[in-house]
Image (cartoon, rainbow, N blue to C red; front, side, top):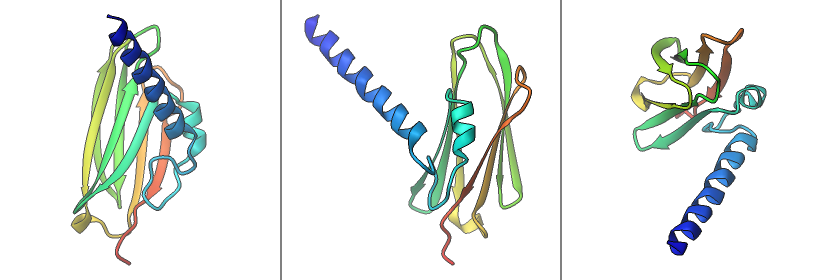
Length: 135
């Protein structure tokens, strides 16, 4: 039992370190671009990351509901003008993960905009990324 507590504590420390490193890193989560760090600070419970994986980029969004009530969240992803939308109901204390694949063959300019709108918030969180393209 004592061994499990040590492993749990070490895992928790590593997790907190990774979350802090992601939130505080300039250009957090971007491939060759700069994220809007002000938006990351304004919404620390929302993590967005873009990772290059072979012939595509994988954009992941994680939402954690630490509010007192449930709310509806709208995730909008614009890649060079092509819009994708997803909605999620986040119940109190729950999390939601969204993954979007951006295939390199479909990318021209590499402009990515992510907008996360919470039904209980006055303004959305907006992030902009620039993907490295062949040109």
